[in-house]
Image 1 (tube, rainbow, N blue to C red):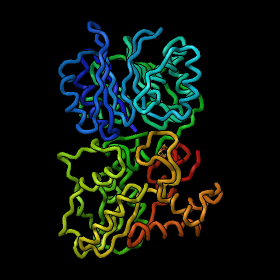
Image 2 (cartoon, helix red, strand yellow):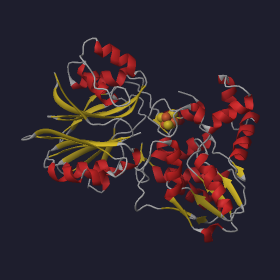
Image 3 (tube, helix red, strand yellow):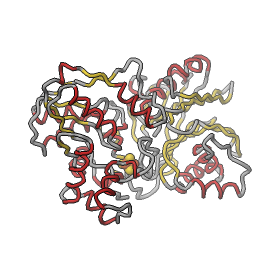
Image 4 (cartoon, rainbow, N blue to C red):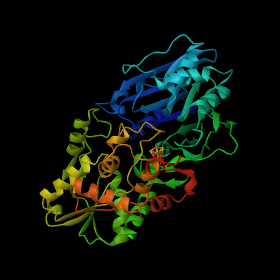
Length: 470
Ligand code: SF4
């Protein structure tokens, strides 16, 4: 996934940039960077790996040595960024969030007039460098950013640092957010609105889908705004990715999770002693469920936070499962003899949740009823670098469907039936997943209920990974 923060200030902005970027650490695990512009010293940039130690530790030196009144920062799950380039626009730095599905075609097109791209160690062109090159294709930043937003298949939100200020462009379908904050002498643009509250910024507004703005320390100007832009913001931001204290489209993440849990409880009639949330995001959904069902909320699984930041995540799947397990420590006294409703944000491959359920039973739980806060995930995300599954066939729902249908060649119509919670096929799939994962019972959230929990018009939400609808 990834996140970014940009700030333009009258005075030095590095303190705000450092903390504003750090507050996106839950969105990425691999690389982080900061780029600044100072009137005297010009541009400066630093990028570090954050796989094994958090942003704040890695950028401690830069926080004290970098200077500038404008800056952008990035937390990234994939490519190193921000990218700094010199072109006919002058020097500028770019940071992005999104996914470019047509990168090969775009690179080929640009190479007709452009000498080269750097290649990352995985052999691919750095997607953020590609965005910088797309911006260079046009006469000015506004047209260049517009061009990048328009030609990319997938999604793109972008911050561009220049000598004159910071440009921000939100994805044409608003899949990812950009919020603007303001305080005396400074304006910031951020993925997570929670990143600016402790820094003294008040929320100004969120960019509309496809909107491009430029700002300095005093003013924000809209430069381009497509007519009839179709909003399709990622619903997973509320379910899992987003920081609890953030709001998107005016809807608080934490509050949405309470509603989501309440709705989940509203259709359930399971008898249990306690409601348990799998930390972190499962906790808020579980609080909502517990409040609505009148079953006490309990924390028999506690995350060991002091030395296990979310950013430590090895790329090998085997190790990831082990790390996920090591992060949680059980409270045996709260488990023994208890029947429990266990709420997680979602089930992707199912391995972690199966291990958690088996562990709870081995530790003396009498029943483990699992209630994911979203429907079965049926499709890989086309719009964001969703690091939790590499292919659709890793999804437990898809593997189960293949097993039930006896073929990998499952038609769209049949898949549609599996997405329908009132169909027999759906029920057979859920029963099979429940059995495979050794749960006492399994009941997923319904898509209509989950959408209602967000509270904005359903057609403004992206739900592709659950129903394949674009
Ligand atoms: S497909 Fe799913 S994860 Fe991807 S943008 Fe849409 S809702 Fe978000």
